Amino acid sequence: MSTLQVWIPLRRPMCYFSTSLVYIRRYSADAAPERPPQKRRYTVRKRWSAARVSTLNPSLITPADHIDLSWKTQAALDFPVPTMVYPTIRYTAHRPPGLIHADIPFPARSRGFLYYQSDAHAALAGSIRFRLTPHNDSASRGQDLRLPSGFPWQILLAQMAYRSEYAFMAEQLVREGLVTREQLSRCRDAFAQKKQIYPQYTLFGLHSTFLVNFSSAVCLTVVGEPLHDLTMPNLFAVHASRKRYFPWTGSAIARFEPSILPEHADRRVIHMRIVEILEPVACTVDADNYTGRVVQPQEGQLLTTRNPIGISGPWAYDIDNDRPTSKVAASLRVLWDNSRTP
Image (cartoon, rainbow, N blue to C red; front, side, top):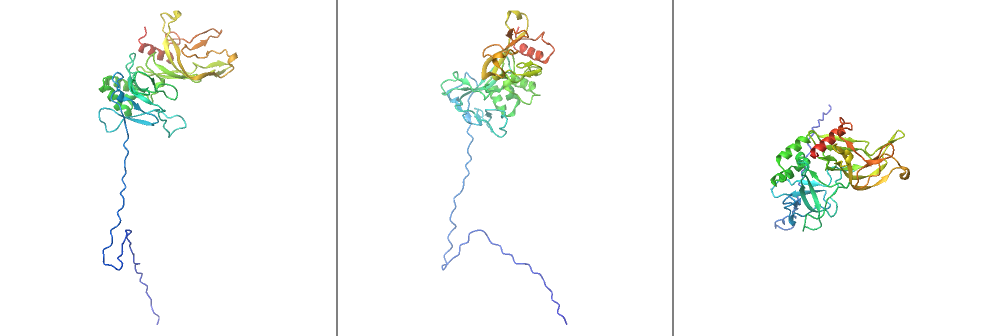
């Protein structure tokens, strides 16, 4: 007779151990010693220091408004009216190519005063700038901070009206009576369709300065109702042997201005003046034998060109007779009208 064997699986016993420290009494009935006290770790949150600015009115600035922005990638501003979030400013609003994840800090010795510069010729052309002064005794001396390109660092009123990060600065200007809400509303309406605003390429009138590169086209935004795109791809270019090239390199600050030459009397003719050379001008061809249309740009002088027979004279554009239906003529007419030039 065979024996039937049945295996009944039993649950394996589980043991649970606490990770806490256990003290065992040895040869004594005394209580176990208390667990050694551990040091508490305190997390100290560093307060983001903000630069105290009491006013943006240049006539009311005091020595206490002298701030230091040196080497800061962004600087927080503390205005008199309390706010939960400090408005911040950066040295460059747009990162250069190749530095996608890097912010360019304010340069060394960036000490001075923030102030609002209004424009008597154009109500929408004001901007906040930074006057560099090593000491806090006077804001009238010194020069304005510049960008790596050499163009003045500034925040246009249009940027403050259009971008949320500058909204508190716009409110500060309204509180001080430096701008009106009507000006801010006009800025928002004018730039509603503009994704980016570049101060160095934005013009409000013939007095507005802008950045030019002698080896590229001129592309500007003219503020009007509506905005106008002023593009002159061949202003600094030369055509020879069925080829287009730029005979000069370098950059400068320039502006348009009405002609005062006798031959342009009773006509609306515009010149371009090279206000300041930023990057030295160099010739891309044999300078000794160069006789192209664009003459070497000179600081403080009008842009000069040669006609087909080799006679030189200031570059000029008659906005009523030189292709009057073109976009260039339309844009220059807006600049002329904005400047209230007779």
